[in-house]
Image (cartoon, rainbow, N blue to C red; front, side, top):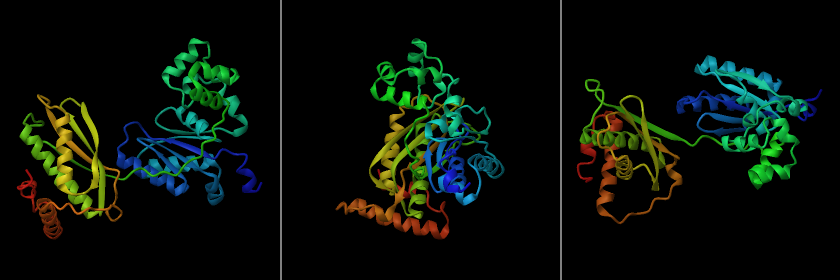
Length: 338
């Protein structure tokens, strides 16, 4: 059968789930493996993604299930990560399928002709897009299975779940989901981290925490400028003794890679944590929503002090580039900052 004809009769949407809490770096590498299969990849952070396989079927000369198996072998052999791959004729069906695969991984492909039959016995909470509250509401009215939900008139489902939510639930129970896979890359980010001295394992000293944070700001700023990138947001993660952590993100007033701007926002983040007696084991500072610095308009500040700092920053970057990143410490970088 010609490929053009087959594409109308086979499932072409792939939904991929990585393990929970997969590191961002590994997640990005998985997205890279997906891009080798198809150019139409939609990142769904923090650990999932969608792939449109229509063109890929013809290019690779293989079926959708075969491509899912190839992906799983590649992520296992190259990254040491197993994935759950659901394949269906729509996003909702593919995502529901991937959710039915037991950990650590596997491939489940649903043929378009068998979608209704496959969905019918599933519990309503297994249907993609149905949250716990919606599932409870449906169960209270005796709708325990997707098949029963599909049999209920859409108007009734809308009265139970609300207009838009009810309409979507009724459609998806029938395997209907007209959303296309929209190519979307994971926003670029850069991360630096610090662990407190092994001899102490943790710290209660606020001055030591600030010094470590300042060091991260210097590292992060230098990294961004070396890449010719700017950050639109900062995320600070505090790690405490025993495993718990605290995380907060704030957007910068303007995209920047300058240490002064990053320092001010980093201090606001640490102040927001309200640390008193928390025993910290480490810090992680992440720059998010990165963009090429050449695309960001820079205004003249008319602030002589700031312009002098920016000029000194350029000199510092040249020194670090020649003699190494550790040749200038944070104390020197910010001796006139406060």
